[in-house]
Structures are given as C-alpha cells and as structure tokens.
Image (cartoon, rainbow over all chains, first blue to last red; front, side, top):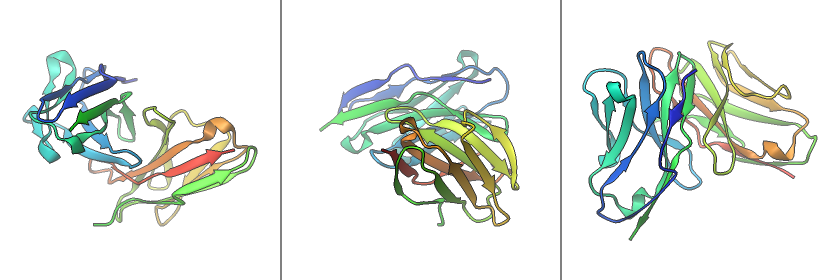
Length: 112
Length: 112
C-alpha cells in the first residue's frame, strides 16, 4: 500500500516569505499526486495535481509543485505567502482507481 | 458550477444512536468516496463506490455501512455510535475517467 509523508507538521512564516512544504510518497510506479488546502472549518480544495508530463506543476493562488521521481517527492512551493494562505495543506496520492491516501497535513500560519 | 453536496452539515447524536449521512455527487460523476477526519488529523479513507458497486474499502468500522443509489447519491449509515466517531465526514466524487476528486463541505458529527 502506498503511503504519504509530510515532514513539517507546523510552519510559521511572515508575509512575503517563501514557502516549501515537503511531501514524499512510497510507491515507485505511475502515480497521481495532489495537494489540497483546507481553510479553517472548510472542506478540502484542490490546489494542484500531477498526472504526467511536465514535472513542474502550477496551481491556483500562485502555488506550484515539483515532481521528482528519483526522490519520490512532490514538494509544494510558493514564492511569497500571504496572510490568507493560513490553512492546512495535505499532500495526497491516488492509489489505484478508487482511493486517495492523504499525508498527515502541514498547518501553515502566516503572520501579518 | 455544481459541487458535491452533503447533508446534514452538522449532526449531534447520543451514544448508541444511529446516523445517516448523505452525499450528492457532482452531476455525471460515477464514483463516490467517503472520508473521516478526526480533530487535527488527516482524512482517513472509509469506502468508495463506482457505478453503485463498492469499489474499495478502507478503515471503515463494521458498525458503518454505505451504499450508492441509482441516482449516484450515497449514504453512510452509522450505528451504535461511539464518542470516538465524532469527526468531520467528507464525501468526494469523481468521474472514473478523470483522476481528480472533488470534495464536499463535510458533515460534522458530534456524538455526546
């Protein structure tokens, strides 16, 4: 079974700082990878996804992620965070056709 | 655009009672997923359905059952509720031909 590891459980940044959240997955074959964001009290929203092709994926709200197959990684980045980016971020991998496996999440707090 | 609809949004039940959570997928989506997210935890996969048949099963307790109906909506039935069942229950839907799942806003179940 696949697993997803997110290394940073809590991150605190000041506005305009750069962000990188780590994500590693366990499966060595074809993977579908996702980053979801969950604002306080809300549902999961898709930030970006990788299925194939260009390993640098651009998502909404200025986020991007890079798929590095050799490192089994799919790290999320944003050059300059805003206070409104305060949320929890989940990396996920699709296992088979019918199951998504989520990482434990990273709580990001951006200080104004 | 239509999203995944879950009802009710909030539910309070006593121990040993039963609860039924409903999920209405995005039109033309044939796959439904159920997730449980405890306080401060990552979403845990419970079960999924494709074309009204169970397609995958995760850590769903025997006290829970679910089904997908002919109109593709799904219901999660929970019996003999325990305090530990208090969580946010997310439903997601996708079109099997696509990899991306869209999440509903969740049902917050509180067992007292």
